[in-house]
Length: 137
Image (tube, rainbow, N blue to C red; front, top):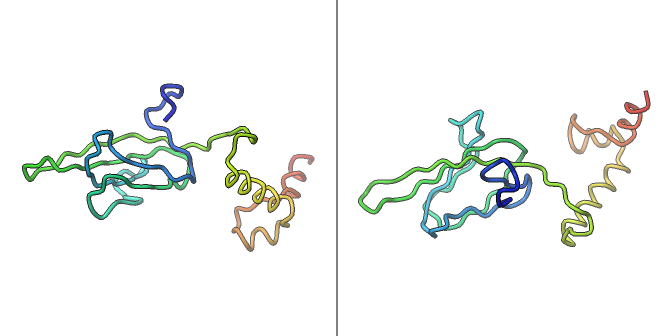
């Protein structure tokens, strides 16, 4: 993704399904790990697959490990560096589904109070009222 426009090899969008497959079409097992916790698997396939859809949960650096069979009983592992980012988009170019999701989130942000937001979404929630107050004082 990006075709050389970004200073990363493999760029994916956070919270969007990403189709993982080899250009050769070979079946592989996939294993996703955070770069800074490279010994801990976030998700992996249970068997060899030609295609796998995965949603990267948050922005950051990941290592994607693909393991393929060599045909002689052995296997080959390849590690791919992945950068997951929040991608800005022009509102008019969003799909109908993405546009609806955006406006639903915006409506929630403007209408849910700080107390209700914390109860629904957790202690990290910040309402528009809270943010405006922080900005003005």
